[in-house]
Image (cartoon, rainbow, N blue to C red):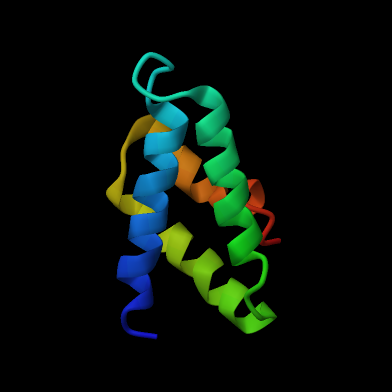
Length: 82
């Protein structure tokens, strides 16, 4: 899954956007709904695929700083992958 790193980064960037964008720029209910949709889709992955995604989030988190890094590290739990 050579492309998975890039796809996981896209998911992380989208999740960061949904989490950290202020409510004047993004409807909070719409943000929660989209996070739930992302989680539901990722939960359909096989256990092996979930493991790869979890590992990718841990690796990608190193590219972020501060709150965003911690947020990305926690995404596997937030998205129900563990």
